[in-house]
Length: 239
Ligand SMILES: Nc1ncnc2c1ncn2[C@@H]1O[C@H](COP(=O)(O)OP(=O)(O)OP(=O)(O)O)[C@@H](O)[C@H]1O
Ligand SMILES: [Mg+2]
Image (tube, rainbow, N blue to C red; front, top):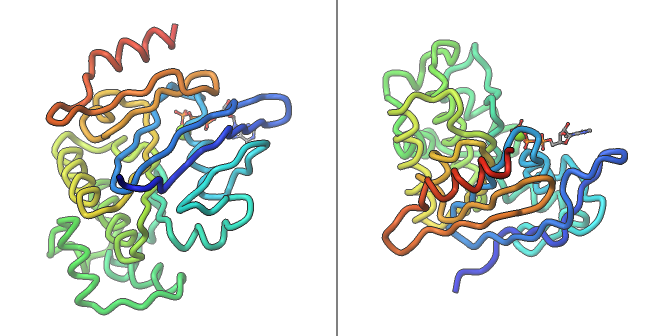
């Protein structure tokens, strides 16, 4: 049985008197792609930020690789990679230069060959790699950011609305990449309000509403999660 890589345990987050997450519990296993799904303002990004340590639990706790975000956030940060909704890379540098720069900020050294291999894994076209990033499409920027995450060798990947703004073929490519990473053992935690996208990519979906997980959907052996069932649960909650 794969072990739990992420865990939220009675996780509660309040801002002044507004409770955004109310004693939330869930766990994500190694190699699993877990999607937290919910409407705007449901608390998805807040949950994700708790794992990154940029939001602190008001009560309860969140764990990455059995380490508490309250006690071990610095070690946790070495083991995770985060893709924000809008990827922040430098437009005047090339994809390869961006990767070299951000790796050096993290004190990580990788050979040019290793960087090329990571860019091969995310299938960033070769002729773009040494061109200025200001001419990249959103999908190409995202591939560069994922290659950077791969080079950091983080066992856990956090993604906030990863497919928003991508065209259907870029989404397909992205889904294939995440499936490959997951089959190689990377654990993926993503937050999204895209029911269809979540059903395509996730092994399990937690539906977040009013600070609680109100539904959990799991992929069968062969079958993807049923989009209709999730959509119906989601829209019922949205009323
Ligand atoms: N730092 C903060 N201070 C006060 N309130 C906050 C803070 N961060 C988030 N909130 C509030 O918490 C609630 C949940 O926000 P969050 O960003 O987690 O939602 P979300 O599910 O990611 O929504 P979206 O789909 O729009 O990205 C919102 O009401 C938001 O205003
Ligand atoms: Mg959000």
